[in-house]
Length: 80
Image (cartoon, rainbow, N blue to C red; front, side, top):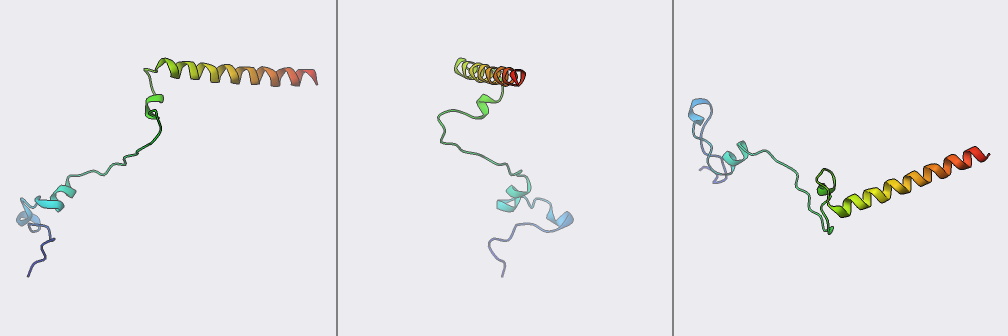
């Protein structure tokens, strides 16, 4: 008796055409990771251009804030 879940086909030349069913599908499938997110925006959309206007404004605000923090640190260091 042969188990029904066993792949169809043999070994070597007798295995020719043994690409039926799940075993055949698995032989030609490359597994990939898929990530889901409940965030209201796409994280991958923020990683590369073209950027939306809102993303450009956010990035500009972050850069402005970092610039101000740097200037503050430099000013305090010079005052010492």
